[in-house]
Image (cartoon, rainbow, N blue to C red; front, side, top):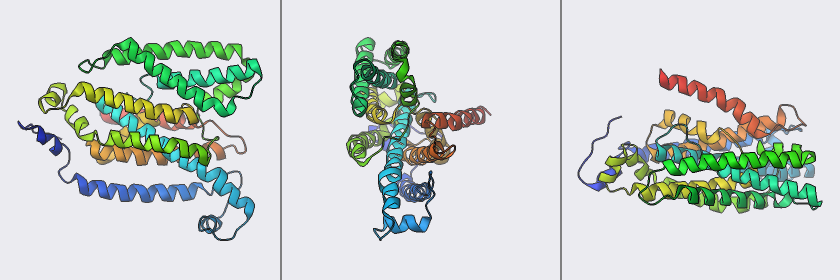
Length: 350
């Protein structure tokens, strides 16, 4: 798709599809309906299968079996809601990072936030092993502090300014990720009795989902995703090139820092409660781009819907394939996402 450049910065608003509002409304309707249908279907699957009529009856606050109601409202529904929030957040951040870097291999973990969260969680598990105190309920707090510490170190290491490019930031993120990965390996060697807990956390999962967690994670995640959506026009301008975006009045340095900071905070919030779930933020934006095109005003919301659906389906597979044993959801997303990503790369090369 070709774009024409005008002398006025107001032409930024024209980049993308001229009838994007109609497409956005249609996409929101289709996405919401698809997400609702998938969620209702996934409520039926688990160790105990529940008939759709019973599910609809319980959701409609009609009389039903108390045990079945607890399974729906306290076990499965929170996991589905957390899966939707997590998948939407990671996919939105991944799409925004790919747009700001103009790199299809960018994902939400590129600045080392996931490594910091993993180090914080593993440190909490190690302290539990060494002291005997029960820190499991505080693992999200340890993970979030670790993620923020990682982001702070990346910022200091890169010495980025409003006018700087992103190379230093990315290199610092890679270096910090390697450093934290080494520290995680040492912690795993020290607390070998807690090795299974560490590995399961590192692979990600939604097993700790509850309504309290959802209440904590939803407001900041939703606000962060909305801020990324509002940057869609600037991302469209940047897709034309750095010089063209500057010519059109976009402060690329501030835009880059805003996207990186908001995206990293959203990722840190999500990862702190779910662990590291890979491939969602990498693959889903590519699928959204194929379906709705490169206009970020459409691509980012589409990524959010597709990410939520994808993660809910992967979580359903994780808890039902070899039930009652639960597979870490990160393993499922990798098994599905890696071949899909290779297929997309081959298709793009052709």
